[in-house]
Image 1 (cartoon, rainbow, N blue to C red):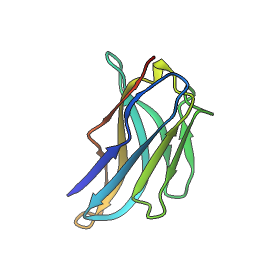
Image 2: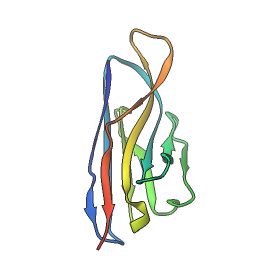
Image 3: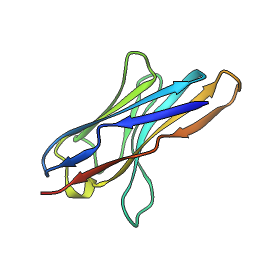
Image 4: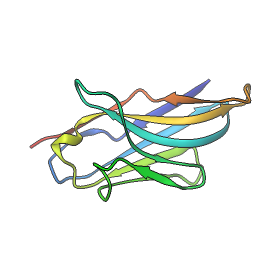
Length: 121
């Protein structure tokens, strides 16, 4: 069993900052890529940022130079530092990780429960 638990969402004014955290736990053999997606009301879920086990990163054009994704030293955590937030960043943010478990040699994508980020004055 694998769990992804997110934290750090909330209400912030335009131009402000938030830091999201996600920790993976359970019967984990290895974690490959981890990332953050978001879904705004009435829109499809979209990739915000991703990071591989080797540290390579990928960002949506809309968040480049404002958001930074990183992994913790234990490699089972991923962070999203969000700066200069805009109202259009308002969404539910989901953590995603590609994980191979102790009981399976195959890797699957797991999702967190989501955390609300609201950017409003």
